[in-house]
Image (cartoon, rainbow, N blue to C red; front, side, top):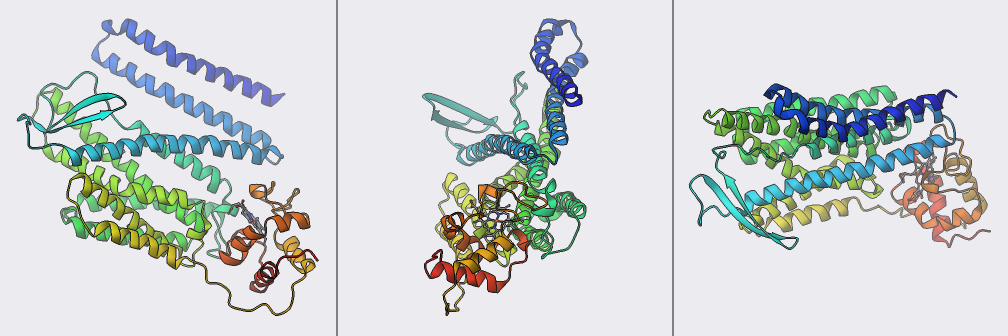
Length: 467
Ligand code: HEC
């Protein structure tokens, strides 16, 4: 009975708030002419808070749902759906944000700054898109009068971060024993792991922000090199604390956090200060715009490494390398290099070496992560019974129709090894994950031995027969 009452109540509230998002603007439109400036501003804020309430309500409904299905077969089903929904939100917001970031950096790079540019302008640009012609002008500082409808770009960034953090919780923190912690890397508790993860983001931002505010920032290249070394340090740290996969995602989440914090703490406040000064007719501090632009450029270089890290999480051959921090650093450098080349190209400063060097770096990462094949020849024939015994012993606690693992109550990825046919059908994937990349059993929870991996290899190499 209880759950129904709770859900009915939350559902009713949700409906009420959704109706509010329609009613409130209408109410404001009707009455705002009679209000003073403060009230008009408050009305705008109330509207934002309504959306915040909407998100919080949706989250609490999910939270209650989780509470009621905990330890039932629906738990992993719920988690999977939460995972899908939040993931789609995350990359949709991410596309909107990074798309806008690419677009504005392109504008900045491609602006015509010389021909037919009025005095107050930094430049202009013609574009054709979606069957229409567009003409844009960038002001040197600000227009004489700030227009009433000024578009800001910030919620894309905030929502990307919020959905990303939710995903971090859904995938890694709610499931810390299995996903975050690898006892073969460091024997810490789930709570310690989560604490380390979250404080590392705060520490990373404080260090980066202080560096940007120091005199160092004027030494462009030296600053970039030092920043890269610092980030590699974080990668090294993460891979010595968390499971390799979690280390990768923390590296990505750290950079993502720097990017959003740049928007939240520097870019938007600078823009607000500029708008305020322009409205009051006060002289503008040009350093504000410059500061914001620098952070925006940093963000631009962060984009490709972050995208790579997010995707790499689904490819064990990247984080499965024995020095995962090294492949992470090399790939990040290569990806940032590709972005640098694109930026130079947009500025028409074609550069011959940046792209090939970046590509070489990426290839180097592919090369060093390539599996070292076990050279031992297989002498005797391995019988299926032996392999089956290994797999029943080391794999079916998770990969079964009825898993006995404490965390995985449903076969991961639907992969089961209950019958000989199921094992045979997946032999290539078994080779890949158990023998070559060696990242199954997950975090080697069931303690498979090298000898057993080798027996599985010999069975597959000699034709994988069932007798
Ligand atoms: C502690 C639980 C656990 C154990 C034990 C385990 N796995 Fe897994 N396995 C997982 C999880 C979780 C995934 C999905 C995540 C991933 O792909 O890394 C997975 C994925 C896989 C995949 C990839 C499936 C796909 O569709 O890509 C293969 C193959 C696999 N496991 C084989 C094995 C084999 C073989 C063993 C035994 C030697 C084993 N696993 C032991 C948890 C486990």
